[in-house]
Every structure is written in C-alpha cells, then in structure tokens.
Length: 125
Image 1 (cartoon, rainbow, N blue to C red):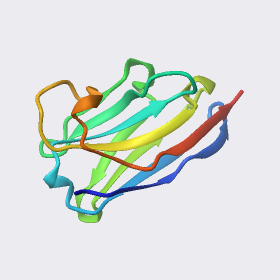
Image 2 (image 1 turned 135 degrees about the horizontal axis):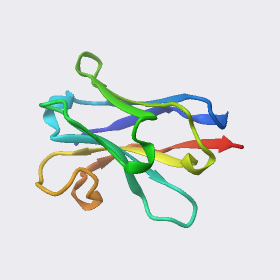
Image 3 (image 1 turned 90 degrees about the horizontal axis):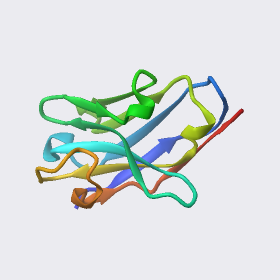
C-alpha cells in the first residue's frame, strides 16, 4: 500500500507559475509510472503528465506541452509538477497517482493503483 501526500497548488493569475509536490510512502522505484491527473468541474479526470520512474521518460498532454514539467526526486520519494505560463483552462483539482504494473498508455486511468488526496489549482484571467 503506497500513500501519496500532495502539497502545493492554490490560486494564481494567468501567466503565473505553481509547483505541485507529491510525497510517496515508499521509494518511487517501487512503481512503474507516476503521473499527474486533472479534473475540472463536470469533466472526467484526465492525464496531464506522466513519468516512467525507472527510465525517466516523461509524457505530457498536448495542452500542457512546453509549459509543464514533471520530475522526480528519488532521494525524497517525491514527484513534482512545475506549471508555468498557466492559463484559466488549466484550472481544476490535480491528483498524483502511482501505477505498479500494466502496459497501457501512461494516461490510462484504470491502471493506477494509488491516488493522492487532490489539490486545487485555480487560474484567473
């Protein structure tokens, strides 16, 4: 059982930056993929960015490419999401997630085993 505890988020004006953190109760190497998902009101939870923890390969949703950066600090068991040039449409509740196994795409939500508590990001215009 892996526990994921998130921090960061908040409110920012368009063009601003925020960083989300997610601390895992176990080494990130015990997972296959770590990812950030976002859920806007009335919408499904969607993948924003993912990283294959062993090889370090990262993937992004088209809408955030070039603006968001996912990274991991193995010494701190921590996953980060640096969000720059934020837009109002980036708003939503962000969740970190851990996948232990599975061969579907990084943003295939049903394969994720553990989820953080969520943190709200609000971008105003």
